[in-house]
Image 1 (cartoon, rainbow, N blue to C red):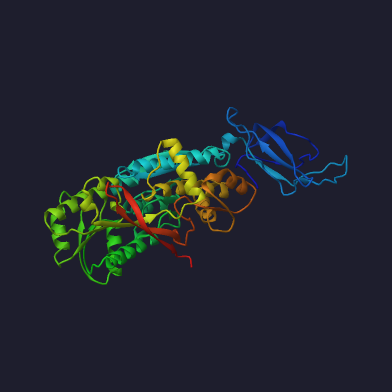
Image 2: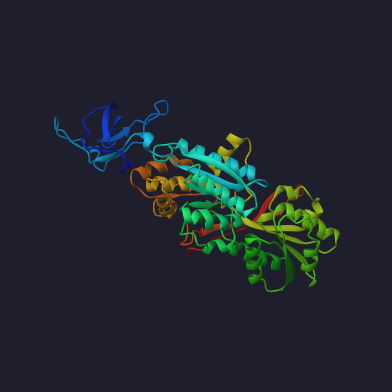
Amino acid sequence: MYLSSPLTRFIVAAVVLAVIGVGAWRINAIGGGDQVDKEVRVAIRPLADGRTEVAVQQRHADRDADGWSKRLTPNARFLPPDAEPGRWLVSSPVSLAGDDSETEPLKIALIQTVGGTGHERRNSFKLAIEHINAAGGVLGRPVIGVIADINFDRDFCVAVARRLVEEEGVHAFVGPNTSSASLAVIENVIEPLGVPAISPSATAPALTHARDRDFFFRAVPSDSVQGTVLAQLAEERGHDNAGVIFRDDAWGRGLAETFQSAWVGEISAAGLASEAESCADELRLAASNGADALIVLVFATEAVLCIEQALELDLFDRFILSDGAQSLSLGASFDADTLARMIGVASTSGPASDSSRFWEREYAAVWGETPSSSLAYIRAVYDAAVSLALASQIAESTDGSAIRDALRGVADGEGSTYSAGQLAHAMRAIANGHAIDYAGVESSLAWDANGDITKFQIGIWQFTFDGQIEIVRTIPYDLSE
């Protein structure tokens, strides 16, 4: 594994295999006209088969930190048990970085709207950064996490994203979390500036074919699947005439279109402007064909307004919801009888795994309690941040194009599998030149050519009598087949 900086590269070519124990040396490296003090040491361990294995480490710039880099292991690094006494043996060469202060730390920004599960998503991001750094960071330096709040104004979202890159030096984005913001930021920041981004919750089908130069990825499935499941669910529940109210933006329009293309019955649809103070006119339009169920494709606050008015106007009493309305705030707004007449669809976590169990334990230990496993996209924030860090380590660079090109190698199934609790082992494998396959907390992160995940679960969810959310059925998808 070769680690290098633009200014300094020096070769440790003669590691003495006969040395017992660990010793440290200070060397003066010359690079770019500057002299840099470096300390290296040799680490040696006996193996059960009688051989002795050797590795080399270098001192971090921060002497108050843990101190030493990961062990760098040459290909030729084993002293055989029958080695000739007194004969010097040397390893194959290992390249060491220049002074650690020259290695630019990876900086990742979470870009998200506030409200809903924003607090939990923020905590999940912080947890990912903490775990990455506990595993040794990236390129020998701690990763820096930045959190940037946005709203639903496209120009504001673009301004925030541009400032993060041009003024704060951010290398990669987790987000934006909404589809409309993602489309705007792709066009004005991600694509022209070459910033790799993984959204944990932007699901609009239009993002699949956005002109992003392959810099935009998603840790959640496209609504091209959710819309189909919504139509199937409505049919299963005996409905043949549906009214649809959708948020009139990229997310709502895309989801409504995929629902309509999969729906075989009668349909009447109406778009709701963002920040609308009433849904009455749109509800009347959605009910105009005698619809017997309302498909609710708006965010949670809007869903409360629309459902309240649908009941007051006696237009609908059956509701099928999307991921946008999957919120405990909606569950707290209605009585048990009304909640029993709601059912929804959303992306959900796969079966319990080593990664998900580790994440739940760690989240609870740090933040006091774990978010319900029924709430979508919180865990995907963690997976997005970890994937960007692993890609940067694979690429040996914080350059946007290099991270982008390495992202599919994070979880393409080609290497040994590492869970979220094994990040240090994954980083060590990368340092040794091995392929890895990161097993995500929320889902597999096997990306197709468009940056969409191919293996995931869609959940059917309901409110309990006390307003909590439970997944009553999961539908697995594997689009790679």
